[in-house]
Image 1 (cartoon, rainbow, N blue to C red):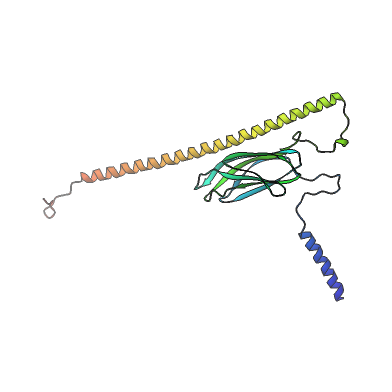
Image 2: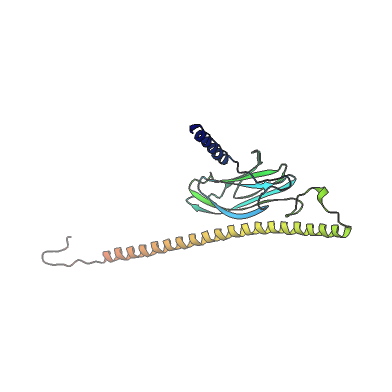
Length: 241
């Protein structure tokens, strides 16, 4: 009985160990099913704490074009340094490029298939958080190109080939227009936060100066009144010479 229980325990332990040691890689069943890699482009804003680092992974096939742009929209804290460090790494972990500015771009051609790592580092700001707007993704011949083998594509006539080529060119142009629109939106939000910060600064500084002016006027009136304050003269209390 004891060997049987011992064997069952070993089997359960092996199952638990194998379940915990699975890697979080993209799911791929048979050879006909493609990797699950999510969307090809993203744009969003994140908040990076003081001295913090945020990393993201984007899947890309080889022979593609990877783009990564960012802009620091505002800072929250004691420091107003808007510089962050952005890095891009290959699926093997090798550094591709680095950018250390308030806004920047990292563009490169993908030489291998896998998850490319993008990191933003806020080590220069130890007393302020930064809000960063990101726009990154990958495109091939078109933004929604279906990567299949050439021998699996259907044979089309010249008219349909021309229509397909024109449609692909239109999609490429729309895609690049969308990228430029994101650049404009990044600049617009950064300018909006800058104007809002200046507006709040001017309001607080004007309020502080108004309070100082009112307080100084009250103090001046008080001391002037003290100068013209004539004490009451009595027989027991007379002013000295």
